[in-house]
Length: 276
Image 1 (cartoon, rainbow, N blue to C red):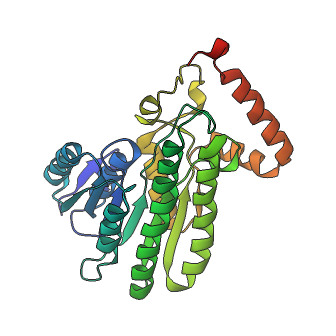
Image 2: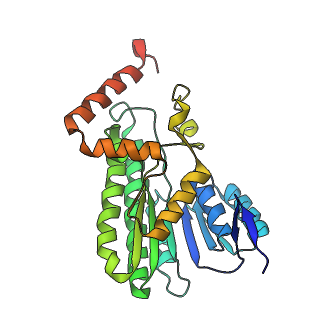
């Protein structure tokens, strides 16, 4: 049997189910699409950028001979979000793995930032995760199998502004949903990476030049670890030994100390003389 290789791992051609990935045009989402296609999954790719999605879809079809469906939609828009939820709920075209990956960051603090941007963050990284997970959970429970992978962050264990609060929801929600769906044979995993080499920080206009290399992760490694953890039934996936240790510390240190450290870091990052 002919096989394809990527990163040293052989995968046999053939359909192994359909995966729907949000935020699939770049960053971790694009890498999820790549690795899932390499594992033989048909794909439904969701993002706002039609052109980038079509380019990615063509590349994946050519490289892995898998079916790729494109949904160019903005998940902040409630009607667009419902269209994706309806696709997930379609029992005649089952989605076997949902990857809730879409998200964005901001270099500004909550008070300094425009409220509309903060509301959009909640719509995309909280409400969309909730709505799509609900659609997936109902359909997968009916079939008795499936998986939901929600991309959270190490920030969910820390106190790093509104982003931490948002990602705390994703992590805790995933843990609770995992408990609820386990008897039905449906797996739920919260992926909690640290800093990853993607377009995420550049798009948020964050200057990350002073961050030591030891804290940077590569997207292929993060995605590979996440998919392996979904397969193993792990509820919380923290890629890399460095971040496993950090999360372990954050789980046990007094919360007051976590807040104090976060506040000190925020003061250091604050622009001087009112500069932006």
